[in-house]
Length: 400
Image (cartoon, rainbow, N blue to C red; front, side, top):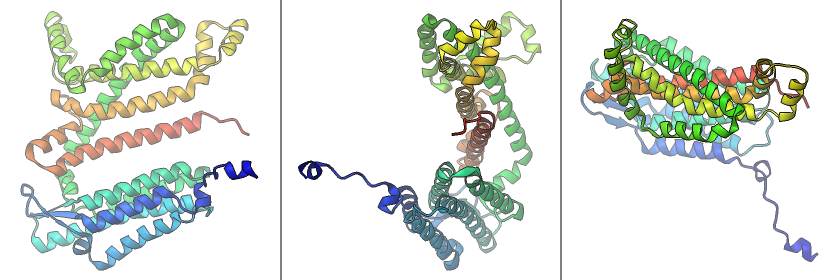
C-alpha cells in the first residue's frame, strides 16, 4: 500500500485526456486573428498605404459566421481524438479553412474594386495570413498523423483541387497579388524557369562534388574530420557575401582565359550563382552520403567482399540500396535549401524569383515581393512533397 501511495500518477495520453492540443491552439489563434486583425488591406492605388478591413466589413456577416463555424468544427474535432476518422476530418476542415479564406479575400477584393474604382488595390491582411498558415499547419500535421495512404493523401489532394478550381473561376483575380502576376505573366514564367535552371545546376554540382567527398570520407575515415571542417567554414560564410566574393576570381579567370567568355562564363550572372549554390550544397550532400554509407552494417560489406564482389559492385549493389533512405533525405533537404538560396542570385544579375522580391523592395510594392517569395516557397514545398513521395515509392518498408 505504501508503494502504491508513493507512486506518481501516469501521464494521460491525448486520447485519454479527451483533447488534442495543436488543433485547438491553431483554431484559437485563427479566431483571435480574425477578431483583432484586418482580413484585407484596401489602398486607393498601388503606391499608397492601405487601411485594414475586418472580415465582417470586407465580406459580410454570413461569410464571417461560416468561417467561425469552420473554426468551431476544428475545435470540436480536437475534443474527440478517439474518433477513428478524426485525422482525415481535421485535414478536410483545415483545407476548407484555407480555401474559404482565399475565396472570401477574392470576393472582398472584387466588391471593393467595384465600389472604389479600378485603381483600388486589395492586399491580403494579417488576419488572412494567420488563418491561412494555421490551416496549412493543421493540414500538414494531419497528413502526417492520418492512418493509411488514403487518409494522408485525400485532404491535401482535395485542397489542391479546390485551389485549382478557385484559380480557374477567376475569384482571386481582383486581388493585388494576382494583378501583379497578370501584368508580368511572361516575365514571371521566364524567371521561374531561370530559378529552376540555377537550382538544378547548383544541385548537380553539389551532388557530384559532395558525393565524391562523402564517398572518400567513408573509405578513408581519417580524412573525414579535416574535410568536414573545411566544408563547415564554407557553410559559415554569409550567403550574400559568398555570391559577391566569387565575382572577382571569375572575372580574373576570364581575363586570363578569354575563351571562357565565349562559353557564357562571366563574373556577373549565372556562373557565380551556380558556383555559390554548389558550394553551399557541398556540406549537406557530403555529410548525408557519409552518414548513409556509414549506416550500412560492416558485416554486410565484408560478406559481399567475401563473395568476390568488386568495390564498384559493392557500392552499386550493396551500399547505395541500403543507404537509399538517408540519401533521398539528403537530396530533399539540399534541394529545398538551394531553392531558397537561389533567390539571392538576382542580386548578381543571374535572375530568378529574387528579381521580383528586390524589385518590390525598391518600389515599396509588398505584393510584388510576395509574388517572388510565395513562388519560391511553393517550389520548395513541391520539391519536398515530390521527393517524400519518391522515397515512399522507392524505399519498401518490411512488412511486420
